[in-house]
Image (cartoon, rainbow over all chains, first blue to last red):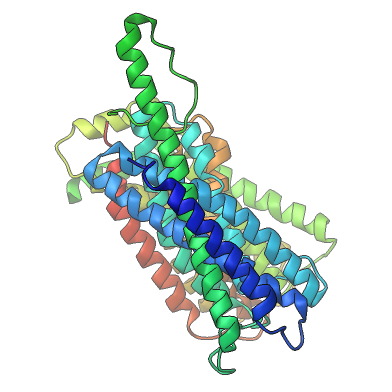
Length: 243
Length: 220
């Protein structure tokens, strides 16, 4: 059920992302003082926004899982965090490159957004170790959901506290005082954001359908082979029991 | 509910007074940390932001020790099963554990803060109430987050590894607030007045989250 329309979605993602980056490179004007380097904005910021939304989405799925005790919600939450972590690593790398280019340092502490993102990333990086070190399947998924909810509540609080603690040197691209982004830039930026969101959904669906197919295959083998069914793999990533 | 909370809290405190483990451990750790800071910083005394940082880092790391021990006895000696068999609200265990962790932290600070003032602090503290305010708000936050993390990690094989990894990022906002509130005590300029409110918001949010999800950590 997760495999439907995957091809169309993949093509749409590819077109939107490629179009967004093309707009960013050729259509949007160059930034007056940062020059070409500012173009990393079109990669870095959408990545960060999508990764954070993914973390929040995982928290919502975890709430659903605890309420309904349906293992599908746990799987959704797991996959969402997994992909957000990958995007998160990309956010930290691109942010670091940008900081190097515009301030001359690989890491700048008075850039609240990036620092908050690092803290959030460090917290979510313990999701998998926590999950994989609990043996009981049932407990594992429940504890992982509790973690996802706690961490989801932590994300906005953390951004609030870190932003209040520091001076403002981050390039406020959306600062209302300066009138925000220039309209050409805005078009390119929102296309990139849409493309990145589509990329996230596509990756999420791919992983979900892979897990789904594996669960179905296992169920079929079990029905076919009786006792000769394959031994369960030793992996802690969640699987669907019901399929 | 109140009777259940009282019973669990009394049991935890009695365990700690009969075989003192957590509080002496945390207190000794904090004093060792001050010694380590003295040599690592190569300073006879500290002041200002540095003093606040040294004190709060020590307190947080000591708190992590207490958090890791919090549910160990319950798991190993069947405390969870006993509690689940009793016809009481499960929130009672949360409340009792938060209260006991809070009291342990207060006991730690009764040792660690005077030790810090004597061993490391340069100028005499001014406006001491700011430190007390920060301690009270931070202890409540650490108690909520710590109880949640302790209960999460106690079922895993990698408990000792997970507790610091989970606790430290979660406590970063709390650390920022506590340092901002208490730095003037050691001679830094006074920070904005909103920080106690930020800490109070942190306590409220994690109190509610702990209340909402704690039941799911006990089901068996």
